[in-house]
Every structure is written in C-alpha cells, then in structure tokens.
Length: 104
Image (cartoon, rainbow, N blue to C red; front, side):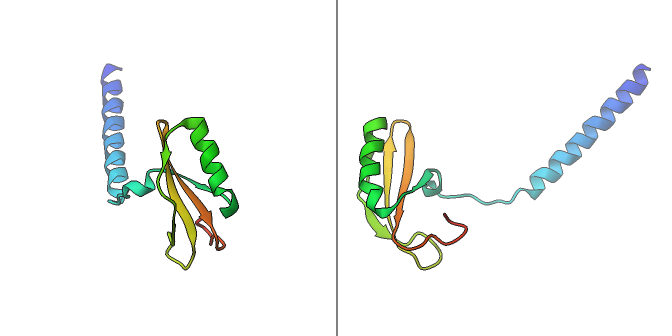
C-alpha cells in the first residue's frame, strides 16, 4: 500500500511539474511601461477640474499639469493628467472626441 501511495504521489508530482513548465512557456514575454500601472478614470471634459478638486480633497496629493493629447492608436483627443496621492496614482482623461471601442 505504501509503495502504491509513493508511485501515485510521484506521478502527480511529475504531472504537476510538466503542467507548470507548459504554463510558463505559454506566458508571453511582454512588459508594460509605468504609464500603464495606474487606474484610468474617464470623465466628461466639463467635469475634469471638478473631479480633480474633489479627488485630491478626499485623498490628498497633487496633480500634474493638464495636457491635450492623443493617447490612442487612432485619431482622438483627450485632456490627460495624473492625480498623485498617497494611496496611489490615477490617470485622468477627459475625451473631447468619442472614445473608440475597446478603449473606453
């Protein structure tokens, strides 16, 4: 009985090891830059300043200067700024053009 348990245990261990190797092999070697390490918040352009004031009053911190940019691989326009708080950083966007699927 003890020998059978050892055999089954060895088989399970080998199977688990083989499964882990294939799982790691399937993981793509892709990394993202720091700008993707934030939560993204989308608000109406008219509400950006009010949201910024409210958010920073609640969590503390500061805002980077607001800029108008295209952050998508298709034509678009949005205001963009970072809200940096002790609890973390939020990327705030106020799109002035429709947000194309699947970005928003």
